[in-house]
Image (cartoon, rainbow, N blue to C red; front, side, top):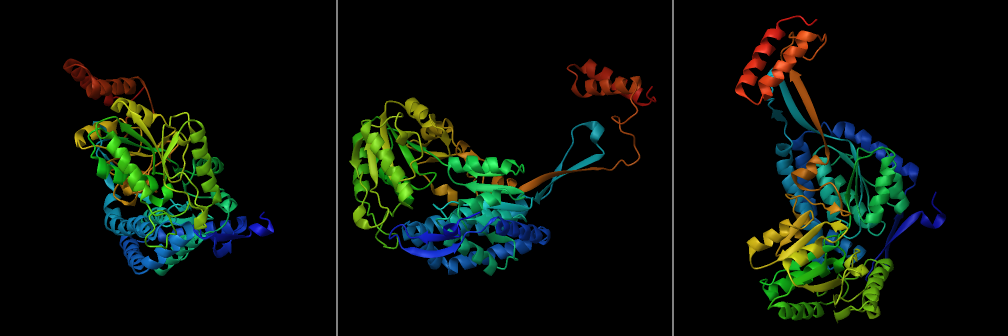
Amino acid sequence: MFTEELTTVKSINPATCEVLGEVPSLNAQEVQASVQAAWQAYESWRLTSYDVRARKLLKLRKLLVSQADEIATLVTKEVGKPLAESFTAELVGPLDACLWFAENTERLLKDQLINMTNPMLTSKQSIITFEPVGVVGMVAPWNYPFAIPMMSIIMAVMVGNTVVLKPSEKSSLTGIKIGELFGKAGFPPGVVSVITGHRQTGVYLTQQRLAKLIFTGSVAGGSKVMAQAADNLTPVTLELGGKDAAIVLPDAPPDWTARGLVWGAFSNCGQACASIERLYVVRGEHTQSLIERLVGYTQALKLGPGLDASSDVGPLVDEVQLGNVVAQVEEALSKGARVLAGGRRRHDLGGYFYEPTILVDVNHSMTIMREETFGPILPLMIVNSEDEAIELANDSDYGLSASVWSGNLGRAEDVARDLDVGTVFINDCLFSFACPQVPWGGLKKSGTGRTHSYFGLLDLVNIKHVSIDAAGGLHRQWWYPYGKSRIESIRGGLKLLHGNFPWEKLGGACAFLYNSVFTPK
C-alpha cells in the first residue's frame, strides 16, 4: 500500500529541475483491472486479420510523423536528451518498425509445412503455426522512453497480442503519450494500456497473469523481475545493461574513428545500454593522433539543455545517476587514472550536468571498467595486440554489443567473431537498435531473449505444431498390442533406416516386412 506522498508521480525536467506534470501511481487493484481488460480485448484482437492490424500500424505511422515535433519536445523535456537525438533515436526506429512489420509480419509468420523423413510417417502432415500468446506486460526504461516500448508494442500487437505498458516513473508523460497514440490510430480499447506509477506499480504488473513479460532496465532490476515472474512461471525477455567495448586496430583512420567513438560514448549523455564504455586502442603509429582527436572532439562538445538547438550533450536524468558517475570517476582517479578531458560536474548549468570525460591509465581493477556507468565517461586503455584487446573486451559480466574500428574490413570481421556479445558493429556503433530488420539482445548479464526482426516476433508467439494423419483406418506400428513379432518388425525397421552396411539394411527390410504381417503375440 502506498503512503500518501506516493499516490502520484512527478515528472521532472533534468535540465531545469522543473516539475512538468504529475500522474497517478496505480495500486494493485487498478493494475489488475488493466490486465483483465487487456485479456478481454485479446479475445477479439487475436482474431483480427493481419491486414487490419497492418492498416492500423500504418495509421499510427502517419500520426508519428504529424506529431513528431510534439513527441520529440516531450521526450527532451522529460529525460533531457538533445532535441536532435529525440528525433533520431526516438522516432526513426518506431516509424521504420510500423512500416516493416506491417509489410512483413504475415509473410514471416505464415504456416510452415514440414516433411517427415521416416517412411513410417508418410501418411502424416505436420504444420507449424505461429499464434499470439495473450497479454504482454512491458516495464520500460527512461533512457529511450519512446523508442524502446514503442518498437516492442508494435511487434506485439501486430502478431495479435495485447499490451500493458508500465513506463519508468522518470518518463511517465511519454508513456501516457504512447497510449494516446495507439488510441488515436484506431486500436480498440484494451489493446494497448498504460499504467503509471512508482516501482511498486511495476511489481504489481509482474505479479499478474501475463503471457509474457518484457523488462528493459538494470541488471538488478531484471533479476528482481525474473524472481517476481517466477511465481506464475511467466516467460520473460530481459534487455539489461551493458559495458560495451570498442576496439581500435592500428590501421583505423584516426579522424573518423575519433568522431565515431565520441558519438558512441556521449550520445544521450552516455545513458544507453550500448554506449561505448570501454575503449581498447591497439598500439600503432596513429595512436597518439587518435587520442589527440578524441580529446579535441570531446572538448568541443557543447553541454546544455536539450531544447537548445546548439546543445550536443544534455544532462543526466537525475541526482542519483549523476552521483553514480561522480563516484566511479573519483574511485578511478584514486587508483591512478588521469583525466584528459572533462571530469567535472557543472553546477553552473542548473541541472544534472556532467562534462563529457576521457580517462586514461585505467585498468580492470577499477569499477569504471567493470560496472555499467551510464554516463558521459570514456575510459581508454592502450594495449599491445589484437589478442589482448579481445581478451579484455570479453573480460566482462556483460555481453550486449561491441564495436571494431579498422581500415581492413576482413580483419575487423575476424576480431568481431571473437567477441562474446549479441551485436558487433564495424566502424560504427549504437545505431542498429533503431533497425527493425535485425535482432537486438545480449549475452551474460545483458539479458535473455531477442527483440526486433523475425527473431523478435518468434519471442512473442506460441510456435504450435499441428500433426494431421490421412491414413484413418490403418493400425500404427507403435500402438498396442505389443509382442515378439512387433519387436522384430521395429528392430528390422531400425536397421532398414539406419543400418551401417547395405546387407544390414536389406536384412532389416526383410525382417520388417515379414513380421509386420503377423499378429503380435
